[in-house]
Length: 211
Image (cartoon, rainbow, N blue to C red; front, side, top):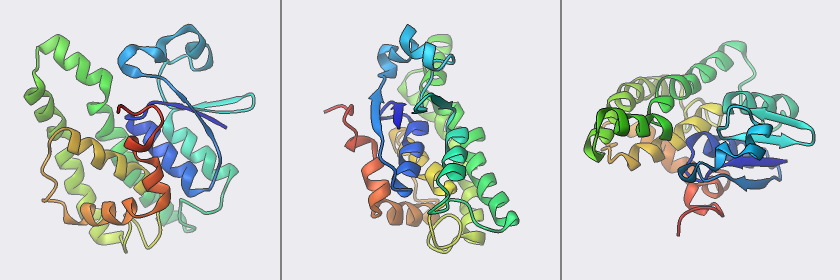
């Protein structure tokens, strides 16, 4: 498999975590979003949306991280990243979607570029924008982890919810957020970053990371 991504992309980060948790070997094809490499003709032929990540497996190309993660869960079911019970699976998916739908899209690179170019926001304005969307989402996750977590976001083993949470924690720090209001999120993060699958997926450890 080949993972087309970018070292600091939150969506690529969550896919790396899942691949590592499932013990799958993959090669990395880096596309520097700052240079517009995701818009080259060769890559757009592979992924017409011109975004990362995309996971290539032979002739198959799966785009959009939620679809990639679900495909990995269906084709490589062990270790499972979704619980067995339908109600529990729904809750994990809801926690993941809270980040993937309501937090992350509003602080990704193209949105932040638009805020700068359209509204003239400086870095402080960008940070305030991002925090304004991250904070209420983290409030909800803090309550959900209190209800359902037992060392991880849901239960006592990593799930798709953690694949989403850890990259978003990394992003929150990039926007200079004080994370102390969310102690349960910090505890999950501490557990995750000590896990080899999460540690090796960290942006700073990717071959295309800035020196």
